[in-house]
Length: 192
Ligand SMILES: [Zn+2]
Image 1 (cartoon, helix red, strand yellow):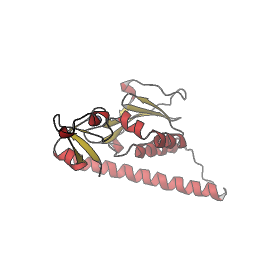
Image 2 (cartoon, rainbow, N blue to C red; image 1 turned 120 degrees about the vertical axis):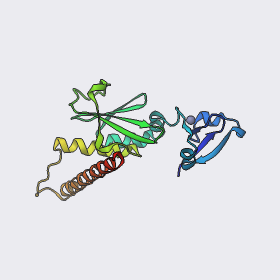
Image 3 (cartoon, helix red, strand yellow; image 1 turned 45 degrees about the vertical axis):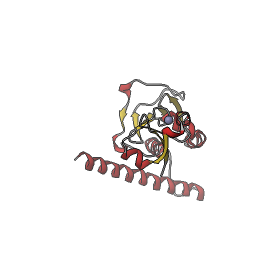
């Protein structure tokens, strides 16, 4: 379970490394866990409980992940903009729920340079409403757009590594589809 620092005066909680947590006097703070933070209805810090802070703290692994999937990206304030060959995406973070959410723009970008689009260009990707980890969205975006592009071509006579790749791609696709169905069911049960 994650550890946070509670500001006892303002009832805000911070990441232990947050400069605002560090600047607090010893008697004004205490170490708490995730459960306490929710239970006490503390306010998530605007700085350290934001997408840009999270992204910058995991920068290397996130960027490697994005690069391995050929996803172009740009951090725009507290939005992470992502582009593939076939569409554009943006990921936001709900600091109260500690969950990420995803918007999709269903037109092909004109070039590789990631740009900010109008609000109306996006729609909420409702089959994957919330995710606890941002990398699950990287996987989702990758699978979604690869599927649309018909990127993998499974010929029976390929090499072993091609066949393995293909089998993995099919498996991932099934997994992504299952995840979509579960998310939909969850959404239906919570809105009922
Ligand atoms: Zn903070």
